[in-house]
Length: 170
Ligand SMILES: CC(C)(COP(=O)(O)OP(=O)(O)OC[C@H]1O[C@@H](n2cnc3c(N)ncnc32)[C@H](O)[C@@H]1OP(=O)(O)O)[C@@H](O)C(=O)NCCC(=O)NCCS
View 1 (tube, rainbow, N blue to C red):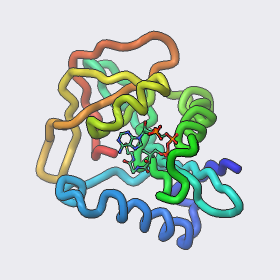
View 2 (spheres, rainbow, N blue to C red):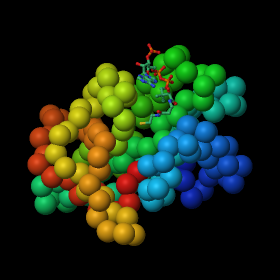
View 3 (cartoon, helix red, strand yellow):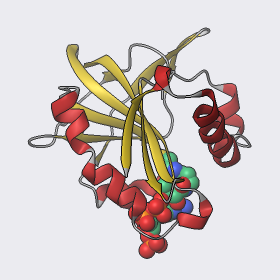
View 4 (cartoon, helix red, strand yellow):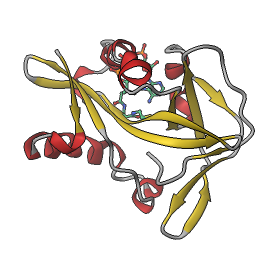
């Protein structure tokens, strides 16, 4: 069963459980700890027998692409707990809930920031890497994102020259 919930309406118990997985996967990475991250707007969880089999978050944001305002869904914390990996669950949840980005939230794009090793995984799901500079905000000012940025378009690929996330990254 796939459950889509506003992040602000998740029970404390669910938030704690998901945060434990997030902490376990990313908590030890210095750059993750040193960065201020956006609070998600939505959480999508695939449950099997009442257990979290995979999940991810969406941040809704108006960003600037080549100085044009574009409404996007920022995807983050895609995590499949270790015991459920390699069974196609992350693929399933991302494919089956693509409609949230384009229909429910009426966004023009999905945007995700990721490490090199996962590019092939997302490419199989029709995401594509962009090579332009991507800027995000921190309390200290505007920062250039040093890793990869991938987009998911409804129709046709974009070839942007410059992206500004207009806020904290996700
Ligand atoms: C990435 C992740 C969400 C995939 O979940 P999953 O449910 O096992 O995914 P699927 O079964 O749909 O697809 C598995 C494929 O993902 C890819 N993949 C998973 N982890 C990978 C890694 N560390 N490096 C490269 N590819 C990886 C592989 O292609 C794998 O295929 P294989 O099983 O044939 O090797 C899961 O491994 C995870 O939670 N990883 C840790 C957190 C993370 O890095 N999340 C991504 C943040 S952008």
